Length: 226
Image (cartoon, rainbow, N blue to C red; front, side, top):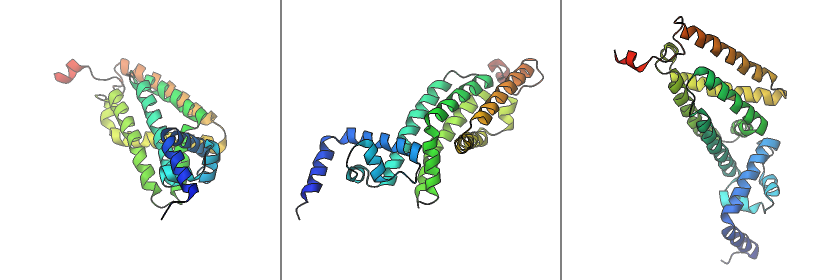
């Protein structure tokens, strides 16, 4: 059976501008999640923001949920790349807290974590979405664990708390702080927490340097070998 003229035109349009249209839809989905939330991220709303026909949402992604997952993938990939670059030269707990503070404020300012938070919210009413979102949080946990190991490996604190458990708690705390800041419309409490953490790391490292607490000062290589 021959396709309708409308469907043929849509497919031709999709084939001709496939990559740009997909990218425009992903970017529109990101912005829609930030401003309208999961409940407001309809095909019509996203297509209107992308300035294209809403049928292209289904042509390129199959469903609105799959488009929203592609949007989450885009944000996650970009932010993890940025996080990795920022943490590359971190060698102390104080430096780690400083980097974490900067990144947290960036994410709050630009609404990056809001995208993930809205997808988590949507998972409660969308069958199967929870598993998909959880799978996309796993790389964040692995990244957190790698950074924690690089900073606390070979220290008393690193031996005391399993890095995997600490990474899980860190990601949960990060998401929770963002959610509360978003709900309350106030980031002061979250910023204060990071400031307290900075002061604690200064004290802890000072104690460690004096030999009273080996919790944050990595054991020298030559000592590990003896």
